[in-house]
Length: 409
Image (tube, rainbow, N blue to C red; front, side, top):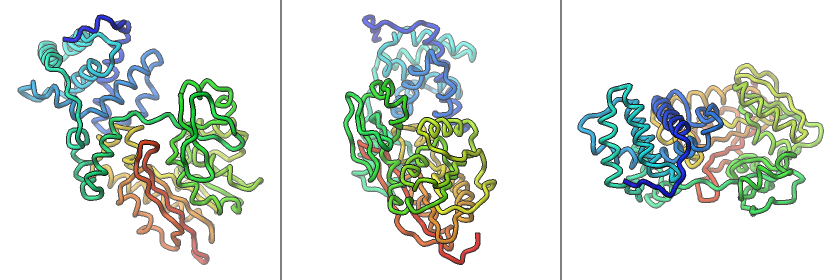
């Protein structure tokens, strides 16, 4: 076993909380009841960073991590013991600050509640003796449901590239808000969609800067700029704007920078908690808007420009949300597409005659991204784009539609 005596392990209490938290998180995420983002929002401050790192690494390497311990099992363990082994193996091989003996001891202690302590001890010691083999191919990395789907849509080269990206931590990127000319230290400007400017660099340098505190930087992936860029020549002539899925306000903020002075902005979202972030982001940047918590069906009015950044499968943002690929199924895709139909129906009714509807997702699934063409009667497609994930940015889809005159809401 690798004792890692040269490392100073975290306090045993923190180590136990991280392992317990990871075990519970993996169990909950695998059940489909919650996302990784939701769980991390509730993580305690004293172990949040360590827990986030563990879970991110587990979902990037889940296939090979699970295979590394399953080979030593004569029968399938319970869900909780399976999640415990997942978390413990990830800690041992991906968190260099911990002592592997300590991880095994804590895992064995936690397994006693299910009388599986001897089993967990034997499995973990066998895994540690053999060591961990890092995966190299898409077959060794990606979930079977995603592999099956992507083989129908993408080339073998694209799939291998996606798999390589899946294992990588994305760069820390941010947008330079209107009027901001200076970059923080250790940052450099990167390509984005006009007229927006993005940069990549040190998270600490950005988050500790006076410019960030003043609202001059907005943490965001460059792919987010693609949707609003489609309307860069249209937005200046719009007097009213509605964002139906606004929280936490990223695309609304970009659109606001392009609107003429005096344009009225409404930012709606179904999440009250996330709308508080929207309000904070707008206040920090001195942008006036009506911020409401509502389902699209509850919003009323007629708007020159409507944005619908819809909930989706998130398959284009797998580096930021690696659990998304493991939560994906044909059933979950069908369910989210029903939600999208609901949003599209109301977004269409809220768009004024001659007005514009901007749709976007964080998905690279053709099913989701061709849905508007099937659902939007009375609209003319102006332009659509699909952006595949690359080293510098996530994947995304966007489409800009114009409502024909004489169409009743």
